[in-house]
Picture 1 (cartoon, one colour):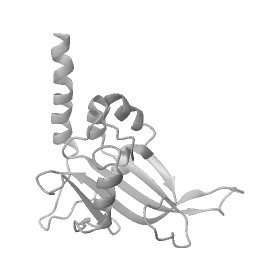
Picture 2: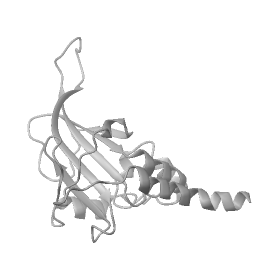
Picture 3: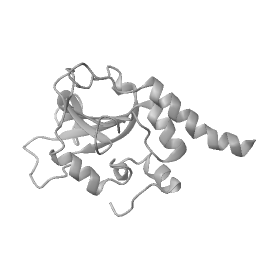
Length: 183
């Protein structure tokens, strides 16, 4: 009985993930920006991270990464991201001068970009798609020729996701045996 429950639990989590926080698209195939993504699971924040050869242009940016709660529950149980997973990467400008701050940097309200990474095998040939939004307008899908597709396929630690930079997710993936340590 207990063994059956252990086998059934991930399946129930996957079913609930697909029902509650699934991506929503408009008639043009654009992703509707989830209004509450800042209430989702916060995975990490990075400062001035850059995956390309081009230098960062004269400003500091914090990347904040969120994932929908239903997909996080499945990941914690299985070490894998279910269909319908939505990652949000919000870039906020950094500042050094403000209020009582004397050293270091903090995030401002000025958004530099808003990006999405969606798991949807029916919609995307590789199983994952990337979107960019302007303000809170629907996000447009990036063409498969965009560098993010190749970069994520070549360097991601878990299923085209950069779990190697998510301190709460990495140990889960390592324990589940889904973590690719070569990335």
